[in-house]
Image (cartoon, rainbow, N blue to C red):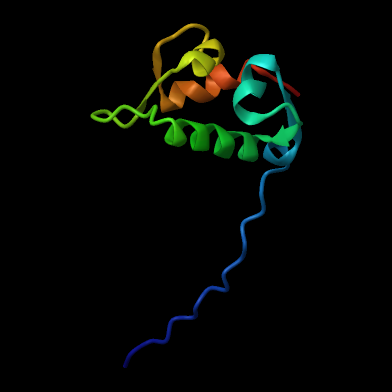
Length: 96
């Protein structure tokens, strides 16, 4: 006999309130994402859109981001950083 499995009802994930709270980018980050307060999720989307638009992702090692002049200011003068360290560098340029 085949046992019937009950399908779990899909529940939509609730976004974390901390990520949805608007943060204010400083003047260096505002060059890339704009000067209006926006949630961290939107800030990350705009940052990645900028990186992809300008082709700043390394061709061989896709985890590395090569900085242009605007990103270099956000990355504290680093020419490149990996995508995981990028969030730590960016978080220094927002006011909570």
